[in-house]
Image 1: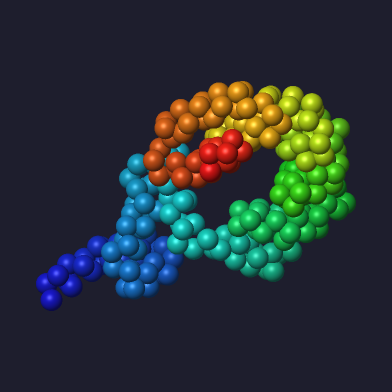
Image 2: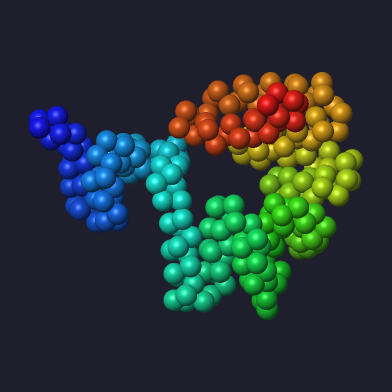
Length: 247
């Protein structure tokens, strides 16, 4: 009996915090059905960011929240769009769908945003281009990217835009152009995505020695990433390693 009571002590303490701070009530149900694991998630999702603040803590909290309720942002975005059907809310739904990997939905939502005064909005064009890349619609994606480039400005010259160009060129077999874009983006895009994609590209185009050097650098950088965020970063390391036949 005493052990049962002690098992629920973390849930009670976290439940008090939920009520006092006015947070979502679904936490209380989670504390009841998962008296050990739910408080642990709550600690990383809510308490640690509050105590520590800062970028890393917020990242940890986001990872934990997504693990508990991955569809939450998408549901909230749909609700907001139903209440107020604005372009801004359509963009929010598109971004939430993309975060869930629902690329067909995301692409359709972005397409709905490209109208009137928003037809040349670089954020919308890039959002649709990204979804088109994930759908392997390389030519359509490149068309949107070229629109952004023609507009000029910060988005046209961003490293993330260069990485998108690289992916489109690679998909279309335009490897020389892809290599130039990958090389520019690899060390400029935050995180390991740029490097991981470039290593995979080099491996797939027969440049194994260069790819091996790139993979070693990715593995070195991976060790410097905070452990709670390392799993997401490892995705790009794994993509690079797989292209080299390392599984």
